[in-house]
Image (cartoon, rainbow, N blue to C red; front, side, top):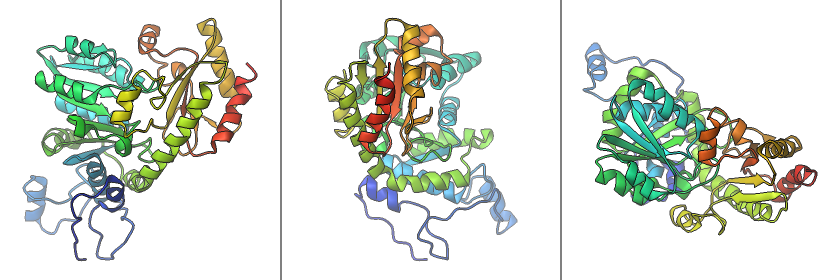
Length: 403
């Protein structure tokens, strides 16, 4: 098939349709799904060169797959990075990054508002191997600066955070990291490259849980790291080949096709989230609403600057209560009253999903860690989907109006 290289300067929503491996001799328009774990080599000499890294070519499923390559190429193009590496889940992407960049005696600095499993992985699991770590307040730049040590190798931020949607200044953190000889990694799961491209603001690594918005319909697990060719192929790929945290071809194909509708989904879901957040602010049983698109959000101006004037598709709200016990009871009542929306800990789906972070995503943290992260018992996170906003409101009222 004749090859026609894409012209430069295409927009991310166009890249999401067009960047992939060249089609096969059959000329398929939809990218092919290559379900294979091994590849027949044309000769022993070529096989030796490929396994030795002297010649490009597929050798074994743990080292690469054409369908997975298409997903990696497309996501890298959308994020504006030289390369990407797909993994079996979002947490495996974090694991791969840490294994590739850190060793015993190194120090990593990260936000106390990050996803609960990330906090446990860095603060507990990697501590067993001699990796030091410090948690700081997500939005306190002076705290980040004060916590940097001579052995700090990595700053890791999630923006917006899960579930309080706190936003950090990516460019400022990048400057801090680089002045200290460290790297900045950004979890871009909530914003996606449709709303936010951290590399343009100085980040060195962009991490994704493809399970969320990149897939968009809650079908598969996936993860990815996007960065320079030096970091991806020089640091991460060798660890990937030895550890086997690879993304399956089928899952890669599903997320690859999900990327094609990412732009329209993110904008439609974000518009619904904004409408729902405005409505929740008016409810008498709601103490506070967390949504970057609201003027009441502490980092509203920064969020609009970094996220293309869009607040994203996740809204969290805190219920009024006189005690933590009552707050938990109220939250459970609202969730158990749902008849249309789903009680589910995932996010990024076209279906609206609600969860109680204190007992699910952050349930394994200590009470002190939850308090530091601001995760109260009355907090409910809403990952807004594509249902009619009026139907979302009516379903929430079944619980809110009967507290």
